[in-house]
Amino acid sequence: MADARSIPLLFGRAGIELKLPEAARPQIIQKAHLPRLPDARAALQDALDTPIDAPPLAELAKGRASACILICDITRPVPNGLFLRPMIETMHAAGIPLSAITVLVATGLHRPNEGAELAELVGDDWVLENVTVANHFARDAEAHVDLGPTPTRATPVFIDRRFVEAELRIATGLVEPHFMAGWSGGRKVVAPGVAGHQTIRTFHSARFMEDPLAVQCNLVGNPLHEEQLEIVRKIGEIYALNTVLDEDRNLVHVTFGEIIASHLAAVDFVTSATRIEMPRKFKTVVTTSAGYPLDKTYYQTVKGMVTPLDILEPGGTLIIASECSEGFGSEEFRDAQARLVELGPERFLATISAKSLADIDEWQTEMQLKPMRVGQIQLYTTGLTPEERRLTAVEIVPSLAEAVSASIARHNDPAVAVIPEGPYVVPVHRA
Image (tube, rainbow, N blue to C red; front, top):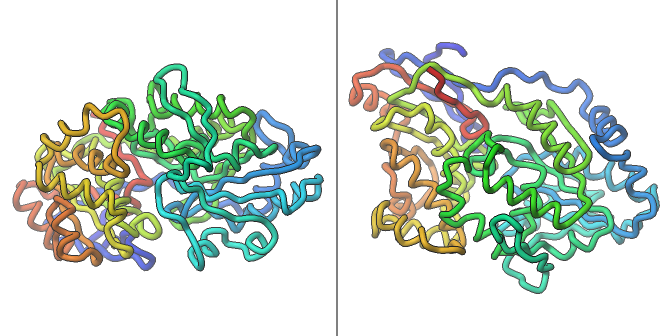
C-alpha cells in the first residue's frame, strides 16, 4: 500500500487521476497481488480436463442431446471469448449438435445485450455464427418453469426453461465480492441470473436486503446464498466455470466442476487477496464503481457506495467516482429514486418493508440507504442529466480533488482511504 499524490482510479474505459492535496495522508487500499496466469488457455484446458467433483467436460457431454451455457451480462467483464469456443467444441466433439447448444445471457432483470454489445460480450464471432446466443427475459412468464417454493424461506422458484430443460447445464462467471450475496459467480448466475421476476423480486425484498448477514464476502448464514443453494439443488445437475481476474482484467484463476464445489474453490482462492483488513476507520473515503463496464449506469454505482462502509467513520464522507456513460438505469429504478427524493430515507424504507415482492429495481435504492445512514455521500460523474443528478439523492461534486480537500478540512483529519478498484476490493475494519 503506497503513499502517492496522484492516484489512478478506474473510471469508464480510460480511467482518471485523483490528485490529492499536500495535506492529505492517503492510504491506498488494493487487492493483494495475484500473479497473472502465464498461459490462460492452458489453464482453462486443465480446468476442463480435471474438474472439481465432476468428470472432465468431454465425458460430461457424452450421451447428451442438448446443452445450455449461461454467461453474465455486459456489467461483468468475464473473459467469455477465452472459454466459450473451447467448451462448445468439446461438447460438439462429444456428440452434442451445434444446433442443440444455447449460450444464454443471464440478464436477471437487467436489459438485454444485443447487436455490437452482444458481440463484445461473447467475444468470439465463431460462437455467434455456430450456436444459438440469446438473452434471458425475466418478465416473460411463458419462458420459465415453475419449480415450486424453496423449503426454508418459501421463495418462488421460476427458472428459464432453456436452462432447466437442457441435458447439460453449465453456468460461467466471475467470482468477486458481491454486496448482498457474499460472492458473485457460480449459483448466482443461475438465480437471479436466469430466474423469473417473482424469484428476483423476492430476493430483492427488505426481508433479505436488510438482513445483517447479506453482505459482501460472507456466505455463512447469508439468506441469499442459502436460497441460491436451495434453488440449484432443485434444478439438479449443474456445472460451473468460475474465473478470477486481476485489476487489469487478466485471468489469475479458473475452476470448473460441480457448481457449488467449484464456486467455493474459487472463493477460497480469492478471499484472502480481496478482503483487506484495516486497523482504523476513515472520515474521508474515495472509491469508484470499478470503471467500465460496471460504471455504465448510476444503478450499478450504488455497489461501490456500499462495499467500503465498514471503514467509513459514522458522519464521515464517502466520495465515489463513476462515469455513468449510459445514464441512470431502468425506468423502474428512476421511479424508486424519485420516491426516495420525495419521501426521504426513513419513509421510503417504511413503504417497502412490508412487501414480499419488491418493485423491480427498487432494491438498489434500498441498498443506497445503507451508506446514507452512515455518512455523507458525494458523487463525481461526467454523465447524467441535471434531473438524473437530482434523483441520485446524493451530493454531486464537480472535482474529486476539491471534494477531498473540503472533506479533510470539514473533518479536521488528513487521512484519506483510496480504493481505486471500488467494489472489487472489500476493506474490513479490524482494530
